[in-house]
Amino acid sequence: MRMKDQYFGDINDYRKYALLRTLCEDDTTVAMCWMLTPDDSRRDGRKTAYLEEPNRWRHYDPTLFDSLKQAQGTRNVRQAEISGIFPNAVFHPALLGDSPPERCQHFQEFFSLALDRDLIFFDPDNGLEVPSKPCGRKRSSKYGFWKEVEQAWASRSSILIYQHFPRKERSGFISQKAEELRKRLGTPKVVSFRTPHVAFFLANQPKHEFLLGRAREIKQVWEDQIQVQFHPPLPEQTETGQ
Image (tube, rainbow, N blue to C red; front, side):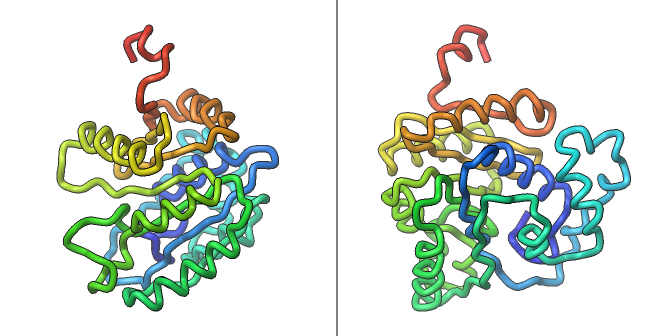
């Protein structure tokens, strides 16, 4: 689910947008940092067959499903903005380049836009930074860097981060990444959302404790598609052995 126009509306977008819509119910505000990179020649962004199976997929989020169905064939992430599926959102759809000056300018613009938002969503192509792709190296734009996550947290926004799975055992990787997020941000808890292909990590500010309740809602509605895990486990999870 790389953040390119060519992937808009596929099955991974359906899960991602539904997750965001649930977390941002009511008057919760969100800033979308798409971290958009140019389209490429890959053909793996065409997983839209689910839109022809409403009996199987529509019940998870009927409004979202109908919107993506209506936009079928439109491969542009701006459709998420103009469709109205995120009524309390601001968007930063500019392309992100590899060079440090470009990146600095990109995030200066974004953080000005994201001021006072309840939730900031980072959507890098591959997820959080890796040692082999320091800032400025070719294709470093595919990664989110800790300095940007930490800046968002310092602004007192809660954070949701997209993470592609590397070639590692997934459960252990999720636990490791959640613990790293907890330590770097100094937060007592993190929630992970595991889908068949990617994961998301939520760090909520103390003033946004309600996001944990919405995470439970996602677990109830999307149980067979999005696995929700609290790090560390909540008491009721320990008691039931979950």
